[in-house]
Amino acid sequence: MAEESLSKTALEVQESFINSLKIDKRKTIQPLVVALVGLVGSGKSSVAQKLAPLIGATVIGGDRIRVELRKRGEPYKHQVRAITEASARFVIKNGGSVIIDSDHADSNKRENIQEKVEQVGARLIFVRIYSDIDLAIGRIINNNNKLGEFFEGASSKESGDYKPAVIKIKEMWSRTPVHYEWNTEKGGAWILKKLPIEFTADIDTSTIEWEKMVEDLSRTLLNF
Image (cartoon, rainbow, N blue to C red; front, side, top):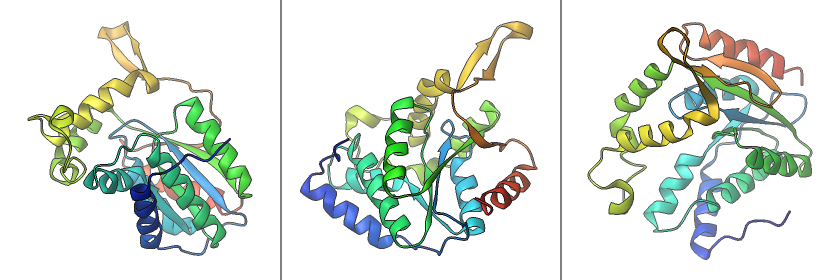
């Protein structure tokens, strides 16, 4: 598969982003790329930040890259993925492992990352993150001020007069059918879908036990 072409400005963003990464020496036997699967507000970032120091991994978050591209007026749909992959390769080549804080529920995205991971001799791990949907919405609302940075410089067509949290909730709602299916029994409820992915762990961040689940996952990964 050919590499995604980047504009000159996007290449500058990529270089700046890579230079900002703090690469810890991996604690796992082989280099790992941990790809997260989860809806907006599910707790992916919290899990990534908790897991990273336990296995010696660097977190690569798509939102940070989007922020920089937005500030420079750059389109980011494909360029975020290309910068993420280039950053992951850099980390692996410099003795680290990677946690990609982005949703990998889509099959094309998974196939693409699988190919790129194999090219650098790493092992790809999928971890599912989920939570009660009402709790996820609450998290988005509570993080409204932090989300403001993401939408700084967004066009009026994208943001209008909406608060950043509203835009994130709209994104969450549009992707809910990817992760959940509606069950009409007992008044109706969203039920987590069974996805065609082999997960190394499923972490429910709605529970007080989620940090222990991450610690258990780290012990599993340290043997990989």
